[in-house]
Image (tube, rainbow over all chains, first blue to last red; front, side, top):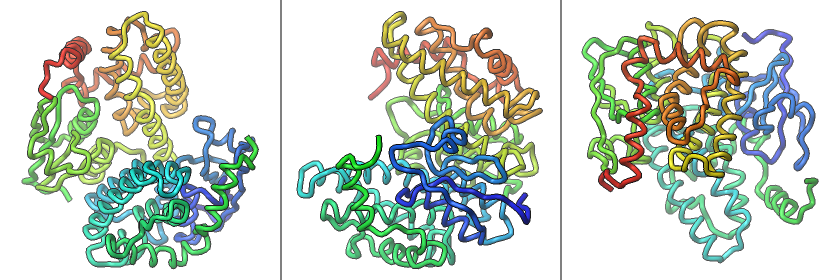
Amino acid sequence: MAAEKDEIKLIGGWASPFVMRPRVALNMKGVVYEMTQETVGKKSDLLLKSNPIYKKIPVLIHNGKPICESMIIVEYIDETWSDGASILPPDPYDRSIARFWTAYVDDKIPALIRKLRLLVKGSAEAEVEAEKLNAALQLLEEAFEKCSKGKSFFGGDDIGYLDIAFGSQLGWIKAVEKIVEIKFLDKEKIPGLVAWSERFCAHEAVKEVMPEADRLVEFTKMLLSGSFAK
Amino acid sequence: MAAEKDEIKLIGGWASPFVMRPRVALNMKGVVYEMTQETVGKKSDLLLKSNPIYKKIPVLIHNGKPICESMIIVEYIDETWSDGASILPPDPYDRSIARFWTAYVDDKIPALIRKLRLLVKGSAEAEVEAEKLNAALQLLEEAFEKCSKGKSFFGGDDIGYLDIAFGSQLGWIKAVEKIVEIKFLDKEKIPGLVAWSERFCAHEAVKEVMPEADRLVEFTKMLLSGSFAK
């Protein structure tokens, strides 16, 4: 499947939590890749050609073949470079649980972040959406206890599928904390997740690709001010 | 993984396209299971306990362990009864393509069906939504040509992951054809898909679990008239 002289390109963007997912997976597998940065508001010809259905990043191009959708790419990476650290757990039931909570993360977290980052601190709307994010994090705290079984990560001793799916949202959760001035990663409420988030962000495969919250806040301001091309 | 005296229950409902998915997969693997029928508008204690997050069917309960979300269940079945016919293709790239188009089906088809079944034939709104469904089917026609490579199914010689995902929507597509009186499975426009749909519906693993369009139309009328418990 994976050959010595593989050509591996990732069409991405530094601020995208979805692009971060395959980057962490490629780092875990020790795969060297070239990343191209899409410009916000524009779509490169390569992107339009590689993902004609959704025209969205990330797209992984492996020896000329495009693979789209962040977690599908992560599974592709896991299956193609299968001799490296395993991303999905080996047991079918554990795999189904990791997939279930990954679907939950995708169902709830990105939409709440997209709403919250546009809201004004202290507004009633921000309070309502913050409550929804807190409720989702509370459920993920319980999921962490069950999945990690006392170990460091959802995936056990090392990061796995659900760690990658959820962990890639942490930069934006921290950015939104600054924008609406509400603490979401709160040690009092979700101690397991807070400790996990620190371990995740410090992981060798993660730390160089995790965007800083301040840069994401700045990115949001530019987005709101219309500084990017349409 | 799968033992001789496995206890396999499926919490389902005859009209749900999502429940049909694990049923086809279990049939393909020759797995005997017990199905309980949820009553529309009620939730059984077993469902509430087994899927506390979404409270939705289907749920597969394998030796007391619940697995939720239709395509996650299908993958679980494929991985657990791995000595039967393979549902996902063996090659990582082919797997990513099957997963991509399955996500596309889930993104487009059920929402369009839910809208269309409530609309009045000949209305402008029905025309607009019908156009969207036709556009999605046109893309799936192209996907069929690429995935099947001249064979009978998306999965090749036998039905696979994407066949199950998309094929389980066919009963409802036919029901909606009757409700809004628009032909969607049109040989002139999507000849490959129409021929595929006939093969899929006649498949041994499918024919006993595919609901008849007329029953689904009747079900929709009862839903609209408020005949089901709330």
